[in-house]
Amino acid sequence: MHRLWLIFAQTVTVLLALFLVVSVLQSAWLTTQQTPPAVVAFQEAPPAAAHDAPMPGSYRDAARAALPSVVHIYTTQTIRQQRNPLFDDPIFRHFFGERPDGDGPKNAGLGSGVIVSANGYILTNYHVIEAADDIQISLNDGSAHKARIIGSDPESDLAVLQIKADKLPAITFDQGDRVSVGDIVLAIGNPFGVGQTVTMGIVSALGRSHLGINTFENFIQTDAAINPGNSGGALVDIQGNLVGINTAIYSRTGGNQGIGFAIPAGSARNIMEQIIEHGSVTRGWIGVETQEISPELAESFGLPDTEGALIAGVMRGGPAEAAGIRPGDVLLAVGGKPVSDPQVMLDLIAALRPDERVAFRLRRDRNIVEVEVKVGKRPAMRRARN
Image 1: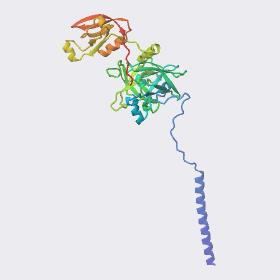
Image 2 (image 1 turned 180 degrees about the vertical axis):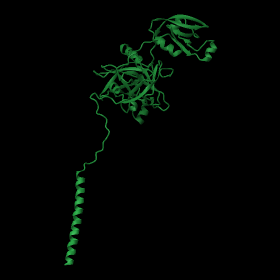
Image 3 (image 1 turned 90 degrees about the vertical axis):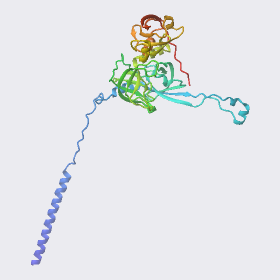
Image 4 (image 1 turned 45 degrees about the vertical axis):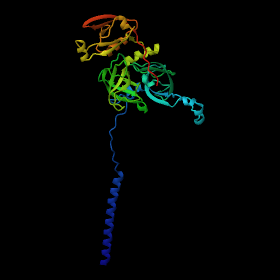
Protein backbone atom coordinates (compact mmCIF):
# COMPACT_ATOMS: atom_id res chain seq x y z
CA MET A 1 0.00 0.00 0.00
CA HIS A 2 2.80 2.36 0.87
CA ARG A 3 4.41 1.58 -2.47
CA LEU A 4 1.24 2.46 -4.41
CA TRP A 5 0.89 5.74 -2.54
CA LEU A 6 4.48 6.70 -3.41
CA ILE A 7 3.90 6.03 -7.11
CA PHE A 8 0.70 8.11 -7.05
CA ALA A 9 2.47 11.04 -5.39
CA GLN A 10 5.32 10.99 -7.89
CA THR A 11 2.88 10.88 -10.81
CA VAL A 12 0.95 13.88 -9.51
CA THR A 13 4.18 15.82 -8.97
CA VAL A 14 5.34 15.16 -12.55
CA LEU A 15 1.95 16.18 -13.96
CA LEU A 16 1.97 19.44 -11.97
CA ALA A 17 5.50 20.23 -13.22
CA LEU A 18 4.44 19.63 -16.82
CA PHE A 19 1.39 21.84 -16.33
CA LEU A 20 3.54 24.71 -15.03
CA VAL A 21 6.04 24.42 -17.93
CA VAL A 22 3.25 24.42 -20.53
CA SER A 23 1.60 27.42 -18.90
CA VAL A 24 4.81 29.44 -18.91
CA LEU A 25 5.65 28.60 -22.54
CA GLN A 26 2.13 29.39 -23.70
CA SER A 27 2.23 32.81 -22.00
CA ALA A 28 5.57 33.67 -23.61
CA TRP A 29 4.34 32.49 -27.03
CA LEU A 30 1.20 34.62 -26.79
CA THR A 31 3.25 37.68 -25.78
CA THR A 32 5.55 37.21 -28.76
CA GLN A 33 2.64 36.89 -31.15
CA GLN A 34 0.92 40.04 -29.87
CA THR A 35 4.00 42.40 -29.75
CA PRO A 36 4.12 44.58 -32.93
CA PRO A 37 7.42 44.66 -34.86
CA ALA A 38 9.81 47.52 -34.18
CA VAL A 39 9.53 50.51 -36.64
CA VAL A 40 12.67 52.38 -37.80
CA ALA A 41 11.94 56.08 -38.43
CA PHE A 42 13.83 57.64 -41.35
CA GLN A 43 14.35 61.38 -41.84
CA GLU A 44 12.83 62.38 -45.19
CA ALA A 45 12.81 65.71 -47.01
CA PRO A 46 9.42 67.35 -47.33
CA PRO A 47 7.68 66.70 -50.64
CA ALA A 48 8.61 69.09 -53.48
CA ALA A 49 6.35 72.02 -54.08
CA ALA A 50 4.04 72.02 -57.05
CA HIS A 51 6.40 74.29 -59.07
CA ASP A 52 9.41 71.99 -58.45
CA ALA A 53 11.45 74.59 -56.60
CA PRO A 54 15.22 74.01 -56.81
CA MET A 55 17.19 72.94 -53.78
CA PRO A 56 19.19 75.65 -52.01
CA GLY A 57 22.34 76.44 -53.96
CA SER A 58 21.02 74.79 -57.13
CA TYR A 59 21.38 76.38 -60.58
CA ARG A 60 18.91 74.05 -62.23
CA ASP A 61 16.69 76.90 -63.46
CA ALA A 62 19.62 78.55 -65.26
CA ALA A 63 20.68 75.24 -66.80
CA ARG A 64 17.11 74.38 -67.76
CA ALA A 65 16.70 77.76 -69.49
CA ALA A 66 19.98 77.63 -71.43
CA LEU A 67 20.53 73.94 -72.24
CA PRO A 68 18.02 73.72 -75.14
CA SER A 69 19.78 76.65 -76.86
CA VAL A 70 23.23 75.03 -76.93
CA VAL A 71 23.98 72.70 -79.85
CA HIS A 72 26.70 70.25 -80.80
CA ILE A 73 28.62 70.95 -84.02
CA TYR A 74 30.27 68.16 -85.98
CA THR A 75 32.47 69.04 -88.93
CA THR A 76 34.38 67.07 -91.53
CA GLN A 77 37.26 68.22 -93.70
CA THR A 78 38.44 66.29 -96.72
CA ILE A 79 42.19 65.79 -96.96
CA ARG A 80 42.94 66.60 -100.57
CA GLN A 81 45.81 64.54 -101.86
CA GLN A 82 48.14 65.55 -104.65
CA ARG A 83 48.57 63.15 -107.56
CA ASN A 84 52.16 61.98 -108.10
CA PRO A 85 53.31 62.56 -111.72
CA LEU A 86 54.53 58.93 -111.87
CA PHE A 87 50.91 57.80 -112.05
CA ASP A 88 50.65 59.54 -115.42
CA ASP A 89 53.55 57.47 -116.80
CA PRO A 90 52.09 54.59 -118.89
CA ILE A 91 55.00 52.22 -118.01
CA PHE A 92 54.54 52.89 -114.26
CA ARG A 93 50.80 52.34 -114.59
CA HIS A 94 51.37 49.09 -116.51
CA PHE A 95 53.36 47.55 -113.64
CA PHE A 96 51.66 49.13 -110.62
CA GLY A 97 48.14 49.72 -111.85
CA GLU A 98 45.88 52.75 -111.58
CA ARG A 99 45.85 54.89 -108.49
CA PRO A 100 42.27 55.78 -107.65
CA ASP A 101 41.60 59.48 -107.97
CA GLY A 102 39.61 61.51 -105.50
CA ASP A 103 40.07 62.84 -102.04
CA GLY A 104 41.59 61.12 -99.09
CA PRO A 105 40.11 60.37 -95.68
CA LYS A 106 38.25 62.97 -93.75
CA ASN A 107 39.23 64.73 -90.56
CA ALA A 108 36.43 65.01 -88.04
CA GLY A 109 36.05 67.90 -85.64
CA LEU A 110 33.61 68.91 -82.99
CA GLY A 111 32.55 71.96 -81.08
CA SER A 112 29.51 73.75 -79.73
CA GLY A 113 27.23 76.58 -80.77
CA VAL A 114 24.41 78.74 -79.46
CA ILE A 115 20.99 79.21 -81.06
CA VAL A 116 20.45 82.98 -81.27
CA SER A 117 17.17 83.13 -83.21
CA ALA A 118 14.09 80.97 -83.57
CA ASN A 119 14.56 80.72 -87.35
CA GLY A 120 17.85 78.86 -87.20
CA TYR A 121 20.80 81.24 -86.74
CA ILE A 122 23.61 79.76 -84.64
CA LEU A 123 26.62 81.59 -83.21
CA THR A 124 29.92 79.74 -82.76
CA ASN A 125 33.70 80.16 -83.00
CA TYR A 126 35.34 80.54 -86.38
CA HIS A 127 37.98 77.97 -85.53
CA VAL A 128 35.24 75.36 -84.98
CA ILE A 129 34.09 75.52 -88.63
CA GLU A 130 37.30 76.73 -90.30
CA ALA A 131 38.01 74.79 -93.51
CA ALA A 132 35.05 72.45 -92.89
CA ASP A 133 33.50 70.78 -95.95
CA ASP A 134 30.44 69.57 -94.08
CA ILE A 135 28.82 70.90 -90.91
CA GLN A 136 26.19 68.97 -88.97
CA ILE A 137 24.24 70.40 -86.04
CA SER A 138 22.81 68.19 -83.32
CA LEU A 139 20.08 69.86 -81.25
CA ASN A 140 19.27 69.23 -77.62
CA ASP A 141 16.26 67.11 -78.64
CA GLY A 142 18.53 64.75 -80.61
CA SER A 143 17.56 65.91 -84.10
CA ALA A 144 20.33 66.57 -86.64
CA HIS A 145 20.49 69.29 -89.31
CA LYS A 146 22.92 70.27 -92.03
CA ALA A 147 24.21 73.83 -91.57
CA ARG A 148 25.48 76.47 -93.95
CA ILE A 149 27.89 79.28 -93.14
CA ILE A 150 26.31 82.75 -93.24
CA GLY A 151 29.61 84.52 -92.60
CA SER A 152 32.62 84.61 -90.34
CA ASP A 153 35.10 86.97 -88.72
CA PRO A 154 38.49 85.32 -88.18
CA GLU A 155 39.89 88.34 -86.32
CA SER A 156 37.38 87.92 -83.49
CA ASP A 157 37.06 84.13 -83.98
CA LEU A 158 33.30 84.21 -84.51
CA ALA A 159 31.06 82.68 -87.17
CA VAL A 160 27.33 82.51 -87.87
CA LEU A 161 25.64 79.36 -89.18
CA GLN A 162 22.04 78.66 -90.16
CA ILE A 163 19.94 75.51 -90.25
CA LYS A 164 16.52 75.00 -91.83
CA ALA A 165 14.30 74.85 -88.79
CA ASP A 166 11.66 76.98 -87.10
CA LYS A 167 10.55 77.67 -83.55
CA LEU A 168 13.95 76.91 -82.12
CA PRO A 169 14.72 77.75 -78.45
CA ALA A 170 16.82 80.91 -78.87
CA ILE A 171 19.00 81.96 -75.95
CA THR A 172 18.43 85.24 -74.10
CA PHE A 173 21.31 87.73 -74.23
CA ASP A 174 22.44 89.52 -71.09
CA GLN A 175 21.55 93.18 -71.41
CA GLY A 176 24.36 95.72 -71.11
CA ASP A 177 27.23 93.36 -70.29
CA ARG A 178 26.41 93.52 -66.57
CA VAL A 179 28.71 90.64 -65.66
CA SER A 180 31.26 91.46 -62.95
CA VAL A 181 34.26 89.78 -61.36
CA GLY A 182 33.03 87.27 -58.77
CA ASP A 183 29.71 86.52 -60.50
CA ILE A 184 28.75 82.86 -60.75
CA VAL A 185 28.61 81.55 -64.33
CA LEU A 186 27.85 78.24 -66.03
CA ALA A 187 29.73 76.94 -69.08
CA ILE A 188 27.66 74.73 -71.39
CA GLY A 189 29.04 72.72 -74.29
CA ASN A 190 30.15 69.34 -75.59
CA PRO A 191 33.62 68.67 -74.11
CA PHE A 192 35.59 65.86 -75.77
CA GLY A 193 32.37 64.83 -77.52
CA VAL A 194 30.94 63.16 -74.40
CA GLY A 195 27.64 65.04 -74.70
CA GLN A 196 26.06 68.17 -73.34
CA THR A 197 27.75 69.19 -70.10
CA VAL A 198 27.30 72.00 -67.58
CA THR A 199 30.15 73.26 -65.40
CA MET A 200 30.11 76.02 -62.79
CA GLY A 201 32.62 78.69 -61.76
CA ILE A 202 33.00 82.41 -61.30
CA VAL A 203 34.11 85.33 -63.44
CA SER A 204 37.81 85.60 -62.62
CA ALA A 205 38.64 88.74 -64.62
CA LEU A 206 37.34 91.02 -67.36
CA GLY A 207 38.97 92.67 -70.36
CA ARG A 208 41.74 90.13 -70.82
CA SER A 209 43.89 90.97 -73.86
CA HIS A 210 47.47 90.59 -75.11
CA LEU A 211 46.96 86.82 -75.14
CA GLY A 212 47.81 86.27 -78.80
CA ILE A 213 44.58 84.33 -79.40
CA ASN A 214 42.73 86.77 -81.68
CA THR A 215 43.46 90.08 -83.36
CA PHE A 216 40.75 91.72 -81.27
CA GLU A 217 40.73 90.56 -77.65
CA ASN A 218 38.50 91.56 -74.76
CA PHE A 219 37.92 88.28 -72.98
CA ILE A 220 35.97 87.27 -69.90
CA GLN A 221 38.19 84.97 -67.84
CA THR A 222 36.49 82.20 -65.87
CA ASP A 223 37.42 79.13 -63.85
CA ALA A 224 34.32 77.23 -65.01
CA ALA A 225 35.70 74.06 -66.63
CA ILE A 226 36.15 74.58 -70.39
CA ASN A 227 37.69 71.76 -72.42
CA PRO A 228 38.20 70.89 -76.10
CA GLY A 229 34.74 70.67 -77.66
CA ASN A 230 33.37 73.51 -75.50
CA SER A 231 34.48 76.09 -78.08
CA GLY A 232 31.50 78.07 -79.35
CA GLY A 233 29.34 77.07 -76.41
CA ALA A 234 27.54 79.32 -73.95
CA LEU A 235 28.72 81.04 -70.80
CA VAL A 236 25.56 82.01 -68.91
CA ASP A 237 24.65 83.75 -65.66
CA ILE A 238 22.48 82.28 -62.91
CA GLN A 239 19.35 83.34 -64.78
CA GLY A 240 20.45 81.46 -67.89
CA ASN A 241 21.24 84.63 -69.88
CA LEU A 242 24.15 84.52 -72.33
CA VAL A 243 27.16 86.50 -71.06
CA GLY A 244 29.86 85.04 -73.32
CA ILE A 245 30.90 82.60 -76.05
CA ASN A 246 33.45 80.09 -74.74
CA THR A 247 36.52 80.37 -76.96
CA ALA A 248 39.85 79.27 -75.50
CA ILE A 249 41.68 77.86 -72.50
CA TYR A 250 45.11 78.36 -71.01
CA SER A 251 46.54 74.90 -70.52
CA ARG A 252 49.86 73.07 -70.45
CA THR A 253 48.19 69.69 -70.91
CA GLY A 254 45.29 70.40 -73.31
CA GLY A 255 42.70 70.04 -70.55
CA ASN A 256 41.07 72.45 -68.14
CA GLN A 257 43.34 74.12 -65.60
CA GLY A 258 40.91 76.73 -64.33
CA ILE A 259 41.71 79.47 -66.86
CA GLY A 260 39.18 79.79 -69.65
CA PHE A 261 38.29 82.69 -71.91
CA ALA A 262 34.97 83.78 -73.41
CA ILE A 263 34.05 86.54 -75.85
CA PRO A 264 31.61 88.96 -74.13
CA ALA A 265 28.03 88.56 -75.33
CA GLY A 266 27.74 92.26 -76.26
CA SER A 267 30.74 92.13 -78.58
CA ALA A 268 29.62 88.81 -80.03
CA ARG A 269 26.13 90.16 -80.70
CA ASN A 270 27.44 93.25 -82.50
CA ILE A 271 29.65 91.12 -84.76
CA MET A 272 26.87 88.58 -85.31
CA GLU A 273 24.40 91.26 -86.42
CA GLN A 274 26.90 92.65 -88.92
CA ILE A 275 27.55 89.18 -90.32
CA ILE A 276 23.83 88.43 -90.69
CA GLU A 277 23.14 91.80 -92.31
CA HIS A 278 26.22 92.19 -94.51
CA GLY A 279 27.94 88.80 -94.54
CA SER A 280 31.08 90.27 -92.98
CA VAL A 281 32.30 92.73 -90.36
CA THR A 282 33.32 96.30 -91.25
CA ARG A 283 36.05 97.93 -89.19
CA GLY A 284 38.05 101.14 -89.37
CA TRP A 285 41.67 101.13 -90.51
CA ILE A 286 44.44 103.69 -91.04
CA GLY A 287 47.35 101.59 -92.30
CA VAL A 288 50.04 101.68 -89.63
CA GLU A 289 52.26 99.21 -87.81
CA THR A 290 52.67 99.84 -84.12
CA GLN A 291 54.93 98.76 -81.30
CA GLU A 292 54.49 98.73 -77.54
CA ILE A 293 56.62 101.28 -75.71
CA SER A 294 58.96 99.56 -73.29
CA PRO A 295 60.88 101.49 -70.60
CA GLU A 296 64.01 101.09 -72.73
CA LEU A 297 62.28 102.55 -75.81
CA ALA A 298 60.85 105.41 -73.76
CA GLU A 299 64.32 106.26 -72.51
CA SER A 300 65.81 105.96 -75.99
CA PHE A 301 63.18 108.30 -77.53
CA GLY A 302 63.21 110.66 -74.59
CA LEU A 303 59.55 109.98 -73.74
CA PRO A 304 58.14 110.91 -70.33
CA ASP A 305 56.35 107.54 -69.92
CA THR A 306 55.36 104.34 -71.72
CA GLU A 307 51.79 105.44 -72.51
CA GLY A 308 50.65 105.35 -76.14
CA ALA A 309 51.49 103.33 -79.25
CA LEU A 310 54.72 103.87 -81.15
CA ILE A 311 54.17 104.15 -84.93
CA ALA A 312 56.77 101.75 -86.33
CA GLY A 313 55.63 101.88 -89.95
CA VAL A 314 53.17 103.69 -92.23
CA MET A 315 51.61 102.00 -95.26
CA ARG A 316 52.22 103.89 -98.49
CA GLY A 317 49.03 105.42 -99.84
CA GLY A 318 47.07 104.60 -96.67
CA PRO A 319 44.92 106.94 -94.57
CA ALA A 320 47.69 107.56 -92.02
CA GLU A 321 50.21 108.65 -94.66
CA ALA A 322 47.62 110.93 -96.25
CA ALA A 323 47.04 112.57 -92.85
CA GLY A 324 50.77 113.15 -92.30
CA ILE A 325 51.43 110.50 -89.63
CA ARG A 326 55.10 109.45 -89.63
CA PRO A 327 57.16 106.55 -88.27
CA GLY A 328 58.44 107.48 -84.83
CA ASP A 329 55.25 109.32 -83.83
CA VAL A 330 53.56 108.19 -80.64
CA LEU A 331 49.77 107.94 -80.86
CA LEU A 332 48.22 109.27 -77.65
CA ALA A 333 44.51 109.58 -78.39
CA VAL A 334 41.90 108.65 -81.02
CA GLY A 335 38.81 110.85 -81.14
CA GLY A 336 39.58 112.14 -77.67
CA LYS A 337 39.91 108.63 -76.17
CA PRO A 338 43.32 107.89 -74.62
CA VAL A 339 45.56 105.21 -76.11
CA SER A 340 47.51 103.26 -73.51
CA ASP A 341 49.01 100.61 -75.79
CA PRO A 342 48.77 99.21 -79.36
CA GLN A 343 45.87 96.86 -78.47
CA VAL A 344 43.75 99.76 -77.24
CA MET A 345 44.65 101.75 -80.37
CA LEU A 346 43.61 98.83 -82.58
CA ASP A 347 40.26 98.51 -80.81
CA LEU A 348 39.54 102.24 -80.98
CA ILE A 349 40.34 102.51 -84.68
CA ALA A 350 38.42 99.33 -85.53
CA ALA A 351 35.32 100.81 -83.90
CA LEU A 352 35.40 103.81 -86.29
CA ARG A 353 33.31 103.95 -89.46
CA PRO A 354 35.07 104.02 -92.82
CA ASP A 355 35.18 107.54 -94.38
CA GLU A 356 34.72 109.09 -90.93
CA ARG A 357 37.12 111.94 -90.14
CA VAL A 358 38.64 111.67 -86.68
CA ALA A 359 41.19 113.71 -84.71
CA PHE A 360 44.38 111.86 -83.71
CA ARG A 361 46.65 113.27 -81.02
CA LEU A 362 50.35 112.47 -81.42
CA ARG A 363 53.64 113.14 -79.69
CA ARG A 364 56.30 114.09 -82.25
CA ASP A 365 59.80 115.26 -81.36
CA ARG A 366 58.63 116.03 -77.81
CA ASN A 367 55.76 118.16 -79.16
CA ILE A 368 52.05 117.40 -79.12
CA VAL A 369 50.39 117.61 -82.54
CA GLU A 370 46.90 116.84 -83.80
CA VAL A 371 45.99 115.55 -87.25
CA GLU A 372 42.67 114.68 -88.85
CA VAL A 373 42.51 111.23 -90.42
CA LYS A 374 39.93 110.02 -92.93
CA VAL A 375 39.39 106.46 -91.75
CA GLY A 376 39.59 103.63 -94.28
CA LYS A 377 38.05 100.15 -94.30
CA ARG A 378 40.07 97.39 -92.70
CA PRO A 379 40.97 94.70 -95.27
CA ALA A 380 39.40 91.31 -94.66
CA MET A 381 41.68 88.80 -92.99
CA ARG A 382 41.99 85.55 -94.90
CA ARG A 383 43.40 82.30 -93.63
CA ALA A 384 44.73 79.71 -96.00
CA ARG A 385 42.87 76.39 -96.21
CA ASN A 386 44.88 73.36 -95.24
